[in-house]
Image (cartoon, rainbow, N blue to C red; front, side, top):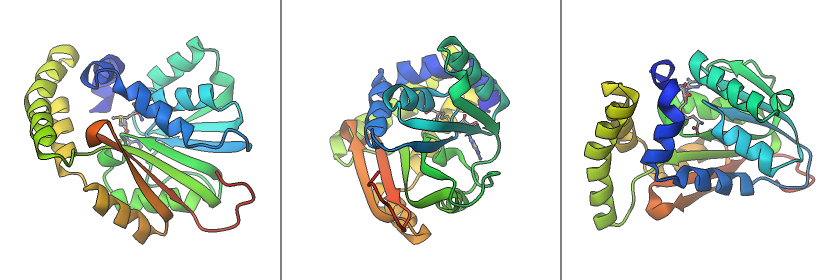
Length: 231
Ligand SMILES: C[S@@+](CC[C@H](N)C(=O)[O-])C[C@H]1O[C@@H](n2cnc3c(N)ncnc32)[C@H](O)[C@@H]1O
């Protein structure tokens, strides 16, 4: 599906989120240490929105890897990094987020924006993130969520069920993709349940940070182990 909609993904992302997606990625980037030398992996990197934002804000990133399963999304990402002349700072890999080619304890931070909801196995993906993080490393997962406030939630559901599929179809030409977006958001874990799942996987100090009335949430957790400088 993402191969089909790659051409219109970025523009629709910005339209449907009213531009809030930029601010959400900035917030996530701000949670990474600006000081330590960081090796990071961005899972489900797509067209590279988060990866580029992280590199722009954190010059202390010494190694950045973007991983995605969609060839066309990665091709778009490569074009964007070429335009910004940051291709030499990024390695792109086509693989499944639940089964990556990396050794255990490889990264200081693993990030994932709007990806975990789309994977075929959320448990396996969380386990994989935990496996490849260095001891003391951090997972930062940005995902859509549903607002707690009943009034805001009703308005948001109306928006998700009607406006999103309509505009999505109009611009991408894909009827299925933006109905799928609504279904996956409504069926995804609540913030509490997702935090419990992260804790069951072994993450420590799991914290949810709701954004924009709770329509998105950043989940952060740490892998136990030695950590000289906190991330
Ligand atoms: C909604 S996009 C998010 C892209 C990007 N992170 C962003 O913030 O714009 C979801 C991405 O997840 C990727 N994806 C879905 N399942 C995956 C999997 N099992 N392994 C790796 N990537 C996956 C899709 O190809 C797509 O690029």
